[in-house]
Length: 172
Ligand code: PNS
Image 1 (tube, rainbow, N blue to C red):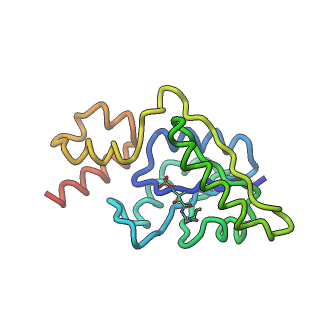
Image 2: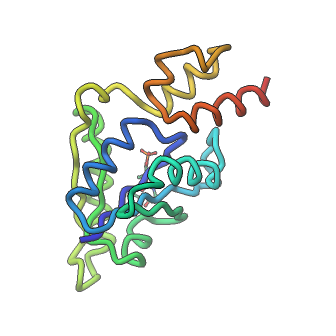
Image 3: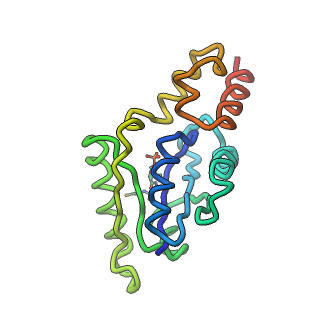
């Protein structure tokens, strides 16, 4: 089974890593798909986000990192995915996720081998449930010494921390 784990990953967090690793255990292959949306302002470019993810999963042969633009449903069909994987941190997450899942299923309904692609949810591990890329970006933006900030360090990879320091260093 091939799972697609889509997202913005701006940047990848330990919460994403946990979901991807647990998802990969359920599948033969997991494709992490970074959304390339020119209309959405992101801190990291698509290439940067892909590189941070590739570094995080460099020793995991089941996990591939790619990017996509346009509709996730179309990309999932092109990549021959059997299902989409998403993490849920809270009931609020489920509200928007249920909508995505319904549309992705309808949009792929005409594909005979899929019969409408399903979405599989994994609950966030409790100790990671409050981590989000937006919080990482916000805290980092206001933290002069990111290296010395244990909160940020616990939420991202060492390479992502360096990338954040460079990003905010350049912006100041
Ligand atoms: O990490 P995010 O920002 O919560 O991920 C959202 C994502 C990338 C999964 C979602 O925005 C998406 O699938 N975008 C692709 C465009 C698309 O297919 N839109 C229609 C869904 S109904």
